[in-house]
View: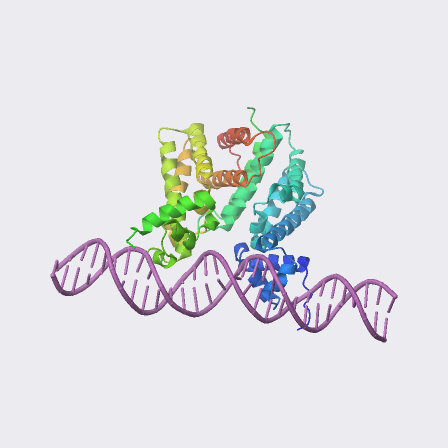
Length: 189
Length: 189
DNA sequence: TGCATTTGCCTAAAGCCTTTAGGCAAATTA
DNA sequence: TAATTTGCCTAAAGGCTTTAGGCAAATGCA
């Protein structure tokens, strides 16, 4: 049996694909080994363990999301930036449900601090620069935006909005309108 | 060995406690059997399988949440109702993190339709009756509320808001202010 | 080019979880 | 009290995880 050419990065990428196909929590070292037609133990030279694999997939997803977010923000401001950025989350979750689920993985503080997660926070603040918020309201608004983006996408993905009118597309647009209106008119304490 | 007195309900309750202690995804038939000091196979007369057990825990959590939500709504309206109801979600998630995670389990459509999930939607609409929204805006608003509640609680639980000022308590209060302001001034399309 | 070292994948094995089949005894019912 | 149901058990098969140790291909160095 020759060598297949495994390495940590290939495993991570393949794990991400696997996650999109069968769901993030079905990503197992065994399934990944099958995909490379290789014995399970062989993977343990490249990833520390199952948790390590999942963490790497999560970091990959966060990176990709940040990448797309940055691209969406380029040259945009105000509501335009808001909807484009939010759309990135939503589209990514639809295109890559497994990766999106991975991006939600609870990371230990150090890993999280070193992840692209911090970029996400910075980008949200960049969006808010188009509105007139000063600290600490900006932070509150960042947290609210994060909540809405994550909450909506997550409820939509779990089927919460399907099979009922009006369709989710319309609600999404109106939620963007609402967020824009809210940010332009953020209430004083 | 005498009989321990297992039944589906006791298993479900114990499973919920276990979830709160060790996390919902650590709830296994084996762990539950250990907790009752009983052989694993014995549980299979009471629950169909591992997934069945998890689903039952999810339904229990949804029930408890609906129960608390209804109690919180009694005698309240407007912003008072809004914050009380939202607080139920947040408090429940803190008191019962495992159960709250269970409540997020993706249920198949029939199970979901028969669950207390529908009560939750009705209660959100009840809250909105204190504001001047008409269809389809009410539906959009319900979806947005659900997103914010779920999103905020879920980000907070995963540690997203800890270790940074201002503290989550304050942000939560300001998000409630913001939602109230938004609902009183929902933008036209 | 030949040898030494590193690297990559393998076999083996132990531990834990799930699920099914079949059995015995306690509890319930008649 | 006898018959039936019910509850928990033993046994066993199959899957995932992880570690230990081995052989051979690839790489590095004379």
